[in-house]
Amino acid sequence: MTAPDPDTQVLFVGYNAAYLRAIDGRVPAGSVVVIEEPDIIRKRELGDAPAGFDCLDRIVPARYQQSAEALDLAVDLSAARGVAAVVPGLEYAVPGAAALAAKLGLPGATEAAAQALRDKVRLREVTGAAGVLNPRWREVHGPEDILDFAGDGPVVVKPANRQASVGVQLLDSVDAAGAARAWERTSSAAEYEQVPDRPLEWRFLAEERLRGPEFSVEALVRQGEVVFENVTAKTVIPGPYPVELGHLLPAPLDEDTRAAFGTALRALVAAVGFGTGILHAEWILTASGPTLVECAGRCPGDYLIDLIDLAYDTRIRLTLIDLLAGRPVELPRSPRRTASIRFLAAEPGTVTGVFGQDTAKALPGVRAVEVDVEAGGEVRPWVSSWDRAGHVIATGPDADTTRRTVLDAAAAVRIATD
Image 1 (tube, rainbow, N blue to C red):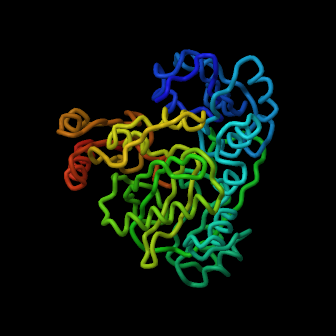
Image 2: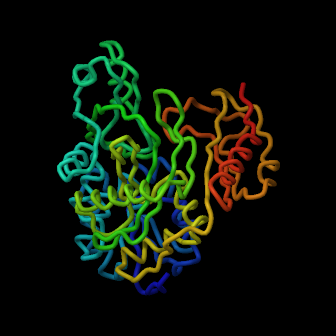
């Protein structure tokens, strides 16, 4: 990482505690300012958050989700202290961060690319027109549209502009009653702490249900050129809600398949007109090649950045700040090891006890064991990424070793429920 200018600040649009923890002590004290929605500051109780990070100067309340209010802060925030970079901290912050960077004349995704990445309808339109493989799809406005699109075949129903698999459903077949249930579940999906209280506009899609192994490609891009890429193998739970159960990276692929993902990624970058930043593109590998599921223009969740750092000996979050500040970066072309995560599951109910963490931590190669529930808490059925109960992370010299280690660690942890 290039030494940052202590007289400048980095603006984060959206509060991301994991990102702040990763850079705390590695960027100048008080050099970070976070812009966050007033309702989210209140609901997540972020008023005292700056006290927990040496790097965080303050959190500024302003609307950015489907709002241009944060743009009005640009002149004020940059007047007293120069802005080195604008970073999207969250999925819903991608358009706001891109617009703010453009207004300040800084590198960013570009506003057009950010809009496409935040709206799967637009993403399907622009990537499909550019020749990127997409499933057959249609924007839907009610159960009748779902039924008309699906016929009696399998279908995916999902919001076009939400996150974390919220509202996504995989249906094997659809009748009138099933279409009505799917529409109700998808259109009423909620994220209390993640969105402001004011009304927001949501769009919805029905798509052909693809069959094949699932992957994601994480990439750093500078002025439209891919400067780092990694392919991750995904494991998704069976059933109607496609929540990720685990990830392994780099994915064990032959050279031709890996090259096909690289070609597809570069076609996507060109199609949306992406400028500078980070991409997390999700794909299903079909007989025709990598087929696009969706793509995000911010750091991926599910601890994927931590896995990349473990596998490649990188510090991707710091590198991203350098990229968005227009500073030179150096990145490895190959990994040093493999890394994997497995999310912890339990029977839904009230937690009566958690056992086996020490056993899991003692296994060779295990890097982290985190349980997010405790006795008296609730384990919910998995319908989105927010419902998982914890995770284990492991590394190893090859994919098979790492996969065995992470599965053994996950099996060692037992979450007992009533």
